[in-house]
Image 1: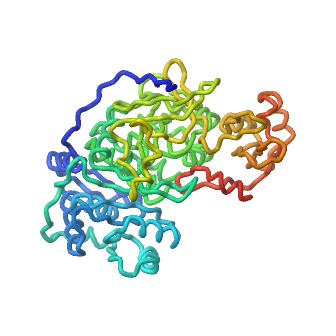
Image 2: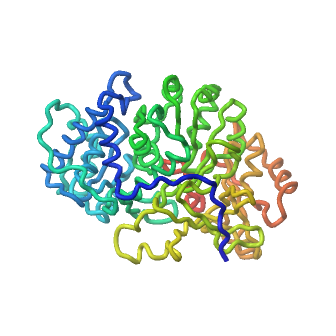
Image 3: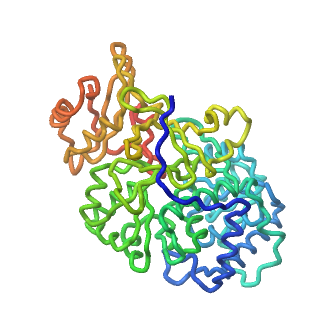
Length: 498
């Protein structure tokens, strides 16, 4: 049985035959002097449409001189900067397939990605990364991105912007929170479909300016933030790292901010989060936004819009721009996206399935790496979800995180929401640990807020609000929860005693 999720009425723009590159170049040529990218670390460096078009052609020519041709993979291991973006866009214009990787990747992590993707060259912005990559693959040609932006008279470039919608554009490796990272392959067509979907849903206009403090090795910052700004003909203030003071200083003159819950938490802790209310849109994603944090932001006048997406699917669900933004919910399907709940249980909880033109074409590598994730044309997200009668979807957790104790199903997110409501708790994560008696026992890892959490009060709170089988049998106090670079909880590290 599949329960279809109602879609919110809305037009879907027909982008057939188009690509990101053609849309971007049209904007740059129509408004060549208009600022497109502004460096958040320095008020003066700015790339206009004309400069961006010329310097990305220069970057494409530099890559071509290294022997890169259409379809070749190019590793991109950089922080977010105007120079690194020039290199990334230049590679796309050349017809290469960009493989973004986390700047803090270890040697073994880089070795896995390089061995799997087989890049022909690498773009780096720091000597340390160049040395690490050279240690891993000493034959891989390297190009430093700071060298790409300084030449006022770039050499003639090879043919550019010829890629078709079905051609590969991006291989983004999954975060690896549940296993070995796999490379999701996005085409020029899937990238454009994903961007156009949020452009329509969020009424993204050329007059908008995004505060972009997200890393660009992930689809949130790269595909939604950067590609979204370029496709809307808008502009973005680019930061190499997140800083509360720098983000708030960029609010005047900006209209939007995309962040992860950790960023919003830190902004709230400054006592100045209310300054974000001057923006027309603040979006949160990449990890669940705690209801308590959402309410604290709303109390400051900031009505955060939470949405849902994955590396493989780009953004697929969103709370509405106009209408109720419901705490704890990720809203309903974006334009052009379909969603369903597969095999819902008695509580209406089942696996979330999605389909639409923004989905990747599969994983890089052998076909058997892809098949299990697609079910009758639907992508199986691995997330458990439920849907309200009015179409709002709530994510209940990962299928692999479901705890089965004494034959009962326990969804960690439900238990976490109750425990997180106590003022002595800053963060909490609930997992199942092996138990001879119960199969699995419910265990809560708790980070205190300004001191040790009140375990006695948490037990009482659980007794008051949760059925006996859902209550944690053990509470473990930790200094911090293990998270990856995008703020996602890495539950397997809790199982290891982290």
